[in-house]
Amino acid sequence: MTLPVVAITNASTCLSDKQVAAAIPALQRQVTVDFRAYWETDCQLTFLPREEPLSEGWWQISVTDNPDQAGALGYHELTSLGTPLGKVFAGLDLQSGGSWTVTLSHELLEMLADPWINWCAQGSDGKIYALEVCDAVEADRLGYEIDGVLVSDFITPSWFEPTHADRVDFKRRILQPLQLASGGYISVLDAGGGWTQIAAQGEPIAPIPLGSRRQRRNLGKADWRKSLLRR
Image (tube, rainbow, N blue to C red):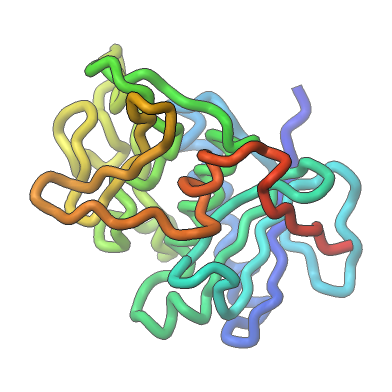
């Protein structure tokens, strides 16, 4: 099977092309070695200079400065052509003292796990959860380094249902299925048929941001805002 090609583009002013391109080998190693071992998916990452056109059928993650959805550090959606598109807002990450490489890793892994933003999993408690593989352990401090590049932790299929896997998240930050690390969250389908967001025990349930993946799951696909890929 042909692997999807994910082009990483830099449209930011706070990072140089060299900085963005330098992170790609570590991200490729995370996907091909760490992530594939649990989720059986892979991709080919490439840095695409802004003056070069995007090839037909390629997926894209664009690193930019400021969010087009209030407070978002990153998200992924579909383009008008139905192709996966991720956005990473490095300017806000740097302003808030966060790691743009963790955000990039987070969006990349979640794009690979659920490229069409319509896949779910039933948990051991019988509830239906969105297949968001980094949200439960999303804090930068829970990430790990590959060749000096900080990347996001992620859950394994055992987070939803205990299996033969040796861990429920890659770095063993949580100990049991359906557990959320401090600062983590997950989307769950409620009895009324809509999506809600739950947070770690004892932490407030954050409202679902307008324009976010979680809010858009409650809409028909035709109502989603679909960005254009850069050509």
